[in-house]
Length: 349
Image 1: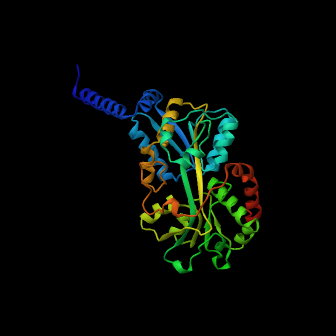
Image 2: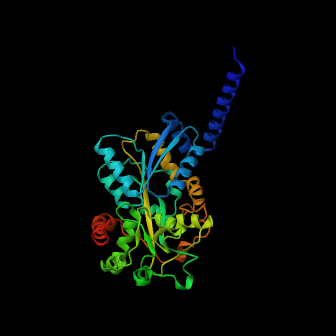
Image 3: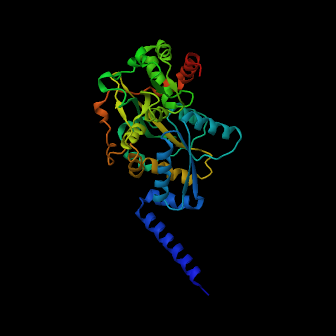
């Protein structure tokens, strides 16, 4: 006999099934097939260093809303920490991570060489903008899912626009002593790329001159935004545009500065692991992060759109109006460790 409690449970279960069926019917055929298989696995674990914690969790929720019944376990850290964690998993022969996202191109290249990535080319990747398609792995082992812009910012209440630095070179001016905040290349792939950019433009002497200004060094490239919000430092260096624009939208006294000597652009890779414990869910996640739905979700947190259907985030300058610098992937891989060592030798941290 079915009592009221059972009836309510059955009705709720029926509603959930109806929701999932409607969701699946709305999906393109290639996603629907993966979704059916991914539901049997039920979850996915994502190691990521591309965006900050809040937008990363929002991405996980957006995936769950698009594919009900498949949960994303978001493990967010800096890219270097995420890579170290993955390496520890592999040494221990523990397969926890399904999909890995980093701001350091060399991480994906290293994993590919070690045959640790799954060869999977998402159908949705065909709709990405040209720069993302060109930077993706030609053999399909990883895709570009995040285009990070790293620039400067000032505390609007304490640094008038007329007095603000306009270039990376200006940060070595003694008047900015004890007033700068920056991340650390030992933790952040984006800061590693920025260090390579500074070394190429100004040589090793740049770091010695910057050290004399005693910058406050955090870990993540986003840490200086928090520091600026609190008024502890006046200038943020090599900070992500997305995190900064989100902070500005919430009323914090921060203003972006697009350096005259180039805004750093970091194409950031995502790949599914060959030994992913949830392989179908991992493939489905790769379809998601190359889809319009993903970029619509990241746009709310001011992420740059890599889909032509999704407009750029509010408050950001069009990419074609900015002086851009993108490090060569081979330079990131070949020179990253040397520039990290140079940083530690110079700053003692």
